[in-house]
Amino acid sequence: MNNRWPDAPAPARSVFVSDVAVDFNKFFCDKPPGEMPPDISEICKNWAEMVAILIGGGWVLWLFAYEARAHAPSLDGDLTIESAAPSKDLTAASVRATWNNRGKFPVKLKHEDCFVYVFIITGDLPQGSLVFADDQNFKKRQLFDGDLTLEQGSQSILRVHFILQKGPVYLFRWKLKSHKFLEWNWLKIRRIEAEWTKEIIWDSSTVAR
Image (cartoon, rainbow, N blue to C red):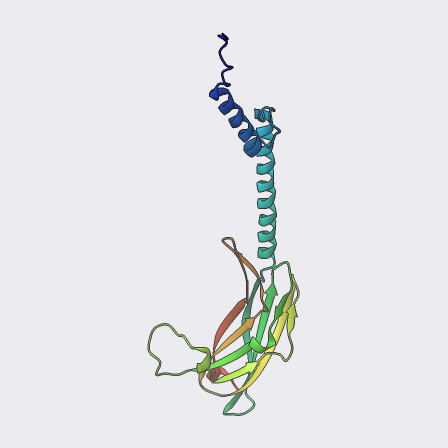
């Protein structure tokens, strides 16, 4: 009679622990079975690389935003009027515009969108703010036939001449519009056109012949 007990199976706990170790290495540590998971120095190294990538990407994005802002056109100017009376009832008005490009890049103007508008200020207008829409103009003159570029750091003087009836008070509106450029605004980049407007009021009755 054989009183020997059959061999007992390995404890389920050891098999479970082994399986967990294999799965952990496979899916989280990418290590062959039996190797220990990464230590704290390797984890810190991985995090440091991730942070460096994020900082580098942010720096590149900031530089791009800075360049987009730097390319934004920057003009300022003023208007003056010189006049003469060729006859008792007519006056010649020369509207002079001085434009300064204070930006770091040239500004290319669209000739088809650059005009001088002339409005008549009549005595029956209501009191309050004086506002004219562009289509209320008495006269309209395109400034130039082809595109004009205002160089960076330059001062440009442009003139337009009109023959007008002597007596009324006139408002001259000088409007410039650029070609599209990049604009950065709260993580949004878009292509827009810039527009500048200057106005001056002139009393033609003061012109002596």
